[in-house]
Image (cartoon, rainbow, N blue to C red):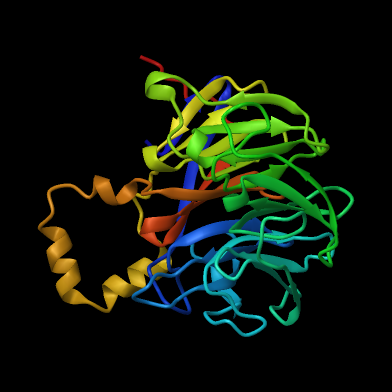
Length: 337
């Protein structure tokens, strides 16, 4: 279903960007994405133990067929400016790029062209120390919120790494976490945390006071959510990772609909791979249905590009982004019988 209509909203599938690639035109297990200016997206490829294709790609997305890689940086390694297990990416007000490394327990900083600027972070469990830093997000004051995943808490730092405060501990109650992953700060400076192992999303004030949670029940229950974002109208998007869905909620946390992936058209880079491999084309023509290929497989991150009203989903195991348009001018088709 390329167009999903639900509760007065319309989500229209636009196109896919990407293919599996250790470098260049594609991604290797994309796990984080953030929208920059002028249609630029910053995508973290986590890589794997068999193919060290980890990196951050600066990609112009645009309309179908316009995608282009402008820079690649933060490649595999332990030297300054490199990462072993890059997890998440965020941009400050100057569009400097911050990347968390959940193995080296540090935050690396680059300019928007990928030039290395600085690195900070120390391993441990004391205030200001990190153990598995995951999601990153900036508030209106350019303070960086870091999901300190294996310490089960959120910590707040200045841009240069000075500790300001934090909240959370291991548990299942309000403002308690179990291996939290993604984080998002909305236009009101409210904080959303994907509480991965507690199968929920928590909404907090910027000072760490509990506001609400989203979890669901039965078929609507979240299963290890990895990331969350909001759009310009306050609707909430959650990567329901182990259910292979993108859940969409009202600002009050009521479920609107779920997207499952609709990539019926091959991405430009994916089509280039097919065109170079006639045997792959032959094998695909023998498949009864390609529907499984259309669908999300462990969607890990979601970003909202307010300039284009698009929702971008990091379809991790497919090595691509799937892009939807929130169509505010959609008119219901009329049929005259």
